[in-house]
Length: 333
Ligand code: UDP
Image 1 (cartoon, rainbow, N blue to C red):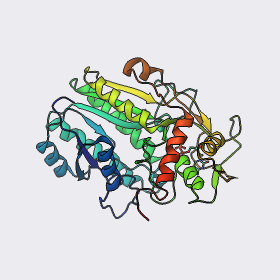
Image 2: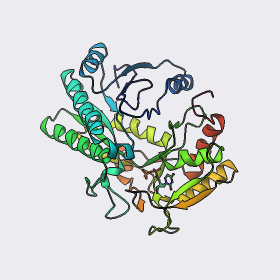
Image 3: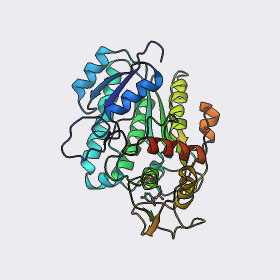
Image 4: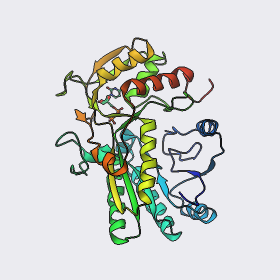
């Protein structure tokens, strides 16, 4: 924001290009090459500092060197399955990291934050579409709980100290890629999420998709989610930064489209975008999955002036362009 230098501080273990954390698998979706390409797209250098968000001294040094007017906090571990195996790592990195970040911000007079939360805080939906008043906290895994706990910490902080402003963004299912095809999702190892997996089947890297259950109470029996184009999601953050300037206190918004699609509808949409057959097999349900989850995004439209602009075809076309141009992701092999 005004007077602030653009700086991307990669903080936290799994999101850093080369941060080392021996006990955690390198789920590094953020690679140095991706940052190089972002700079190519925006035609300007981006100041980048790698650090571990749990390292208080490093955070202090960073905040001493630069004057920030706001922080967008994306750093954290993010694999649901892994969080069940390693709960303490997840709480240490996500919770301790956030506490250290907030303390450092406070010490340096920075009181504006946008936090990446998740629709997972809603748990198993009691009604649909999900609005921001839906009960939260019924999360079934440490990853989701860590998002919920962080939301609560930030809310308490804003209540206790009135000069803080926070926008908590509850993401639904971000997919797609930048339309240049230069940057996109590059999961290391076997993709956990549906669309990166589907894209890898389409490009021939994987033989078939396992569809996790077709006996849900949905139209075709497969799980329904609210998929949102990643560029729409990014724009939601710009809208959130503008909101902070109004001294908004603590605000919470869903970032979703409001429309749910089933796994089989997603497979079909990707077949259309790629012109290729996507083989799949129906397997058992994945533990912890809910039948349907989609947003009521009306509050974000009303208060942020933000609304998802891109539909399913565009999401799949952009994802396919990225996958086709980069069949092995950012690596050159
Ligand atoms: N899914 C699937 N096969 C996969 C990955 C996901 O059938 O290999 C299903 C999953 O059961 C859910 C939907 O696709 O119904 C979206 O899953 P994803 O992991 O992308 O998002 P989340 O479940 O976290 O919302």
